[in-house]
Image (tube, rainbow, N blue to C red; front, side):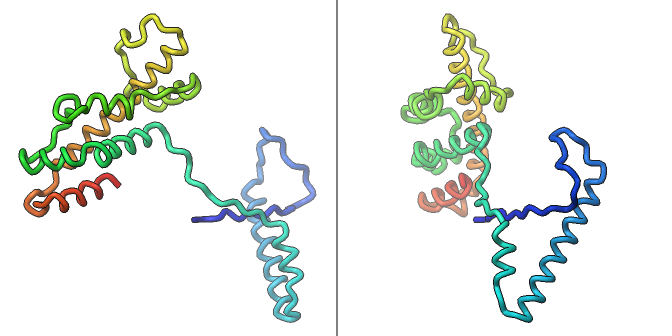
Length: 208
């Protein structure tokens, strides 16, 4: 975990620039601020060495702000990758291993080669509700996977049509990631991973 520590400093008596104002000497101001900071720290350090008094340090840190840094919110593209991995680890792991051991490779056709694969995919991935704003964001993020089967939303109101397109577009994205994941799983060296337990560990590692 990281914390972001920032300090505000007055560098001169000039007015605060407007939000759209060009700062022609911005680099010089940055360097001047650094020199002021170093000078202040050096003074505090020397005074503390003489007096062993923490008052100046306490006064200096009083104006420091601290923020715990968080990971950015995942994009729908990243969520699709995570959901494809979830399908492997949480739903189809046993069948994937069974196919690997019996056929030498796993199928990417969850509709036909996995028990209730189509139902699981729709329930876990496609059948989700989106607000209009979320649907627009999703379609912007996953435009390359946009669903074009108009019959799926024909006759629906514009907002329901939008969320339906988003739901199936997300399904298309997860399907693409699932297919690529199965391709990677099929590259496992079966001679070195002969037991079910060994295969499961390797697949879990792929899905991290």
